[in-house]
Image 1 (cartoon, helix red, strand yellow):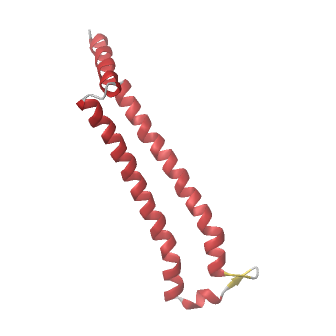
Image 2 (image 1 turned 90 degrees about the vertical axis):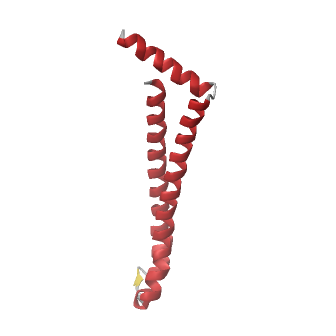
Length: 110
């Protein structure tokens, strides 16, 4: 009897999402809101980290005179640290967004 109820609930939830009923629309809006919140939080992290570099060089001017392998430290950090940082944040976003979608799919299929 419990398996029959669970099966009926699973089909009903899936139908509500597919037919975009009020419940289905609310579920999809929740997924979109979760994805948007995730994107906003990770964008804020990226902006804060990248904006921290010019502030660091402004408040600690001795760092701008340092050279590593003939390249000044600000250029080295902006050129070789910034891009891997953005790639890492992008990879983290993809992983977390896929987890949100999997949770949504589990909720619909459950």
